[in-house]
Each structure stands twice: as C-alpha cells, then as structure tokens.
Image (cartoon, rainbow over all chains, first blue to last red):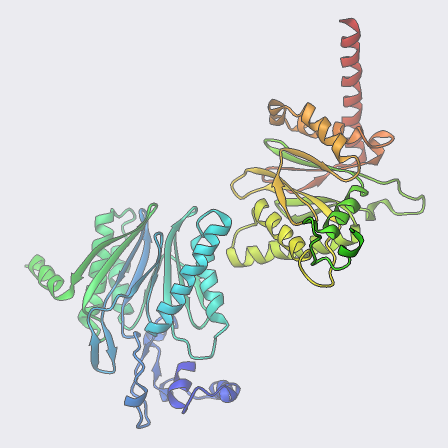
Length: 271
Length: 248
C-alpha cells in the first residue's frame, strides 16, 4: 500500500504520509491503486507495475513480486525452492536471478518483493547474526534471527519498503521456518509460498505433503515440482528452479534445474 | 599525590589507578556479607541480615532479588545503587525474551550488568556503582552458574564465593570446605552456604537470609524455621566432629 504512494507521488513525500494513510481508511479500494491481492490472501501479492499516469517508464523500479518462492518443513529439515525470473511489467528482465540469500552456513533467506530491499536487509541480518554468535558463543536461533529482521524493517514501516522473505534454518530446537515481510508480519509455520505463483505452488505441496514421512529425495522432488507447476501457469515466474535443503549440519544446494528441462522430463514420465 | 587524581573519575592516576573505582570497592567491603554456592542441581545465595530495629518491618529489607524465572542475585554495598542495577537487569531480561524468544543465560545478564558498571567508570560526572553482586541461576540447557561482578565492571565465574564484609575469611572457609562430591546433594550445598555465613554472622540463624533455586524451579526464599533446621543440624555435626577429635 505504501508502495503505491511511492509510485504515484513525485517523490517520497513524508509530509503527505499521514494524509495518504487516512485516505485508505476512507474507502480507496486496492484495485484503484493498481494493487491486487491474489486469492485474497494478504501473505502473497502481485503488483501490476502499470501505473495510470504516463511516467511509468521513468519510474521503472524492478520488483520481484512476479515470483514464486516456497519453503516447507519436513522430518529431515526444511526444503527451500525458488524460481529465477525477474519481470518489469511484461518484459522479462532476467531468467537467472538468485532469489535465495545465504545469510550464513545454517540460515537461508528467500527474496520476494524489491530485490534491493531483500538483499540489503538480509545482508544486514547476516552481520547481526555474526555479531550475536561472537558475543554469545552460540549460533543464533531462527526465531531470534527472524525477530531481528522483522524489528529492523518495522522501523521503516510505511516508508515504501517491499520485502516478503522466508527465514529458514536449523537451530537447537530443530528446523525453523518464519515468514517476515515489510508490513511487519512475522509468522512461524510449516509451509509458506510467496509471490504471484504461490497459489499454484500451494496446490502441489498441499497434496504432496499428505503422506507424513517424506524422504529427502521425495521432499526435494515435491519442491521442484511445485515451483515448476507455478512457472507453468504463472507468466511472472520461470527460469530455473533453485533447490536448497536445510538440515542439522547447515544448508546444502541440492540442484538448479531449468523449467523447460523439467517440463520435458515430466511429460516423458506421464507417457 | 592521590588526592588530585580522584575528583573526575575519567582520569587515570600516574601509576595507572582509577581511584574512584578502588574507593567503590572499599564501599563494597563495608557492606553486609553475601555468599554464593553453585551445586550440581541447586544454586544457593545467602546474605547476612543486619539486625533490624524494633519498629522496622522485617520483610522490606530484601537483599536477594529475582531477575527472571531462572536467574537471581544478591549484592554487597550501597543498597540504593543496587536497586538501579537490579531494575535495569530485570528490564533487560524481558527485552531479551522479546527479541530472542529465549530466556537469558546467566552469563548474558552478568555481562550486561558488568557493561553498565563499566560505562559508569568511563563517563563524566558519574561515579561508579558501589556494589559487587553475585548472580546465580540456570541456563536454558540446565547448567548452573555463579558469577561475581565488581564496581570496575569485570566479572568471573565461581564455584563458590563471598562478597562484602569479611569476604576474605568466608572465601578461605569455602576453599577449605568446598568438596566436589558434596555438590551432588542439595542439602550439602545449602549447608555449605550456611556454614560459611555462620563464620562471620553474629548470633546464628536469625541473621541469615537464604534463597535457593533448583533446576526448572523458581527461586525459593527459605523461611526462618527452615534455616533454623539447617543451623541445628550443622551445630550437631560440629559437636559430633569435635567429639570424634577428642576421642582420637
């Protein structure tokens, strides 16, 4: 919501900040401002960067809301799977974006929203985590790391940050998975999918997670398939599927698979 | 020579002393004794209770303070200074729970208290805190700890220690009588603390305030009767030991 105010005003004008927020309460709907909440779920969102006024191209901020990122906990840790496409409107800016940020050898962060915001704040988080580790002689817990990130961005709430990230790791209480965004949400959970393709990914993971004990192989395959399915149906997701597995020793980069290859593979399996 | 270097505490003396800090340590030596013992499953803090005036309400003179469910502390020195430190520590324990979603470790809160004390030895117009403190408790993973801080802002871990008046005597007693095997038993740990205090406290159990914490339990301040029980047992043991000595 604050994002829209950044796009529409000449400059980020903090003196109008109070007025614009009240404007929301008095009935400006989200669609009028070019924002749509996909599936009515406030946790995943897609921003159409087509502004109504003419100076769209001048203000082309590259966003990664057109994305699919996914993470889920299972018996042997956490699987993190992301796509790698960046779009600006209908233009595919890149097919090889790294949407998983390696905070430290046992913590991962995913990227959805503004690329700069995500990578900047997560690198800052990495610095905080390292200082914590040195001061307290033990690794920081996933709960604490996600809390630090949430507190950092909360101070900028309403100023136009756009970040929807999942902090995934393994600490002394086992696997940890938190969703943190620039609105100030911080939620612990077993499964999250963020981005324009999240609904399609949820469909695959929800049905695949029915059976309780997945092996590492099965879980990786599930994550890969979920992202593939999202790239198949969502125009704003594509490129490659980057897959990570977080376990007690830290994280491992499992695979990087081009979705076109996956498509051929799955088609062959069907036949 | 010493006189001209102790007005502003931020100034070193030519031979490297921070006189205000050393004077603060003198103030601590005038405070009532406090003893701490770290057992295997229980941690004990005992303080010498100064004789209370007839009209004074006994309960308001508490020298042992809980900082959180798993940590508590006793101090020796200026009570008013201690109040400030305890307050800040209590707030920090909760802030830690809020940011990190875990209770503090004993080492963390000791480090925090020591940092406050050190800050006051390095700023203008402020004097150091005139207290030493004994901080005890259990960490999240169940390990017991006992730390001592002093006005300079340093802290050390101890198995058993004493601060305040006659601290040296009590510490020597502890060094002589601390036995690793005895620390397995809760009663023996408590008895060691009481025996150490009895060395310097006048007139026995009436002037002792004792608090214990067992793993996964909250701090418990012993009532007078319980302390009397321990004291009677200790006196009996002493008498029997002396009888044994006389026989041989």
